[in-house]
Length: 118
Image (cartoon, rainbow, N blue to C red):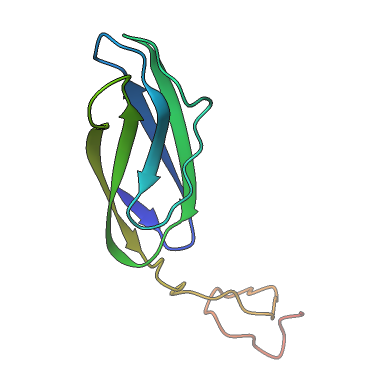
């Protein structure tokens, strides 16, 4: 997606425990340092939660990785990674201006003649 530089960026991470055991210490991190907020830190088997993060768009191509981790009762932590990207574009400056002089242009020539009042 394209987002204007300085515009709001919202990330949504849907985390699902696809296993058959309780996961503890569940967290989502972002490799660019964006703070991710999750409503809880444990997930029962099959349970789903939504985590969120926000930021301000920067210029150019932006890419980051969200990583979800959880600790099962035994064995190593489980992880899942999801990439994200956007293109931050600069809004071009206006190409027209409105002047500060208004008059009744009786002959519609775009020039204020001496007989045309302001």
